[in-house]
Length: 200
Image 1 (cartoon, rainbow, N blue to C red):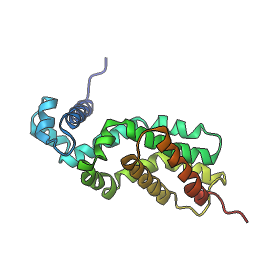
Image 2: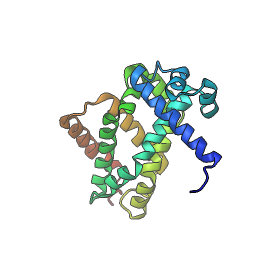
Image 3: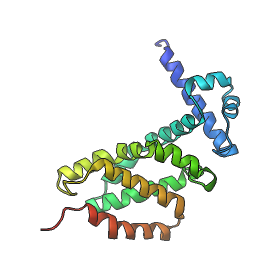
Image 4: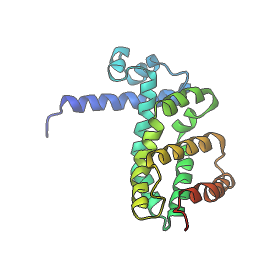
């Protein structure tokens, strides 16, 4: 068996801290969780937690990034299985919204008591846009190369727009089928036509 390296140990420690943090978020709420709470839950000193994460905000942001990246392959597979570009866009966004509603971490982050923190972490920091572009960027580039969406579209700006739409719908809409169908109708009516090549 190969000997463990310092990098392996650091990765394990970061993962243990993130797992402990998510337990604390569930128990106390994101806004009320302190670094001391996380240290106790991880059975580490506060100094050790601060060695890996500079502050509470960076810990929360890393937790969001870790959860998003863990689901990215499945999300990309879901999007690309639809047969038309219209369906890929609409069903991809709707699936992101549905998953956001079902993820307790995301739900806590977009709750009223955490909304200011959420906007700071995801909006102002650009983390949400980065994650959205990581998911959608390659898909949109393929669609653009195939002539399925407009050649003049700025794909990074489009990812930013998708990110803003998803955060808005996750925070404002319910999880029932009727609410999601209403989102589909709006996407088909207003979003998809703006992306398709202009007819001559």
